[in-house]
Structures are given as structure tokens and as C-alpha cells.
Image 1: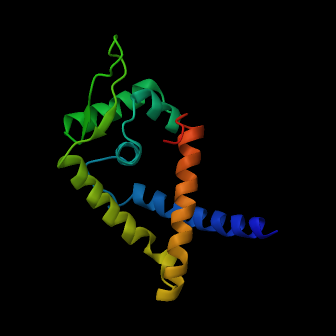
Image 2: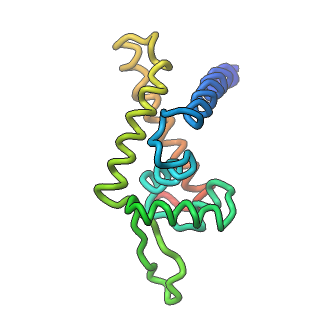
Length: 157
């Protein structure tokens, strides 16, 4: 019963956040030079690096050509770097954020996202936030662990 109530609240928040995400797609709430997918890939590389092109395709369910074009743009703009893997054939190229270019775009993106999502916490006072932060961090750790295991097939280190 409690879990169901919590999930319904989270679903409502997620719906509203998705609406704001759509608004972002049609407005200036993202760096204008990059598409939402390019920003998403940049954020994923930052959070889960090193990532390969194959892992990104699996995460997003996109075609090889789509992911290849996204990575090509990010590489050309020097936002990410790639390195040849230790495999003999060198096919797997892990991606990582390149400094300072990638970090600067991420900083701008996060500032925009912070403005976009700040409405979620408008009714909370300092004490509410002190209570919420450890819970949000715990949820983020659990989500990351599940993501690593289920999507990336990585085990805990």
C-alpha cells in the first residue's frame, strides 16, 4: 500500500518532468547548438564513463547509425574523447568527457535543468529538504546500481 502510494506520486512527478522535457525540446532550455539526444548522450557518458558506442545504443534503443552520428558531432566539437580498447581488434572505443569543452556544455545543461526542475521543491522548507536529500541520494544509488546491472551488465565494484 505504501509502495503503491509512493509510486503514484513519483509517476505524477515523472509526467510533469516529461512535459517540461518536451518544452525543453521546443525552446531555449538547452544549449542551442545541441539536440536533446546529443545532450542525453553527453550526460550518460559523464555519469557512466567509460561507455562504448554499443552500450549507448543498448541504453537508448537507438540504431547504430543514429548513435554514430551523435558521437561524431560530440567528437568533432571536442566534447568527448575516445580511446582504442585493450582488445586486439581495437573495435571497442570507450568514450569519456573531454575537458574543458564537454564539462562546459554539461555545466550549462545542468544550470538549465536546475531552473527547469526547481518547481518540484518550491513548497519545501529547509527542514523538508534536509529530510529529502538523504532519501533522494539513496534512491539515486539504488537506481544507479540497477542501471549498471540491468542495462550495462556491470557488477558492483
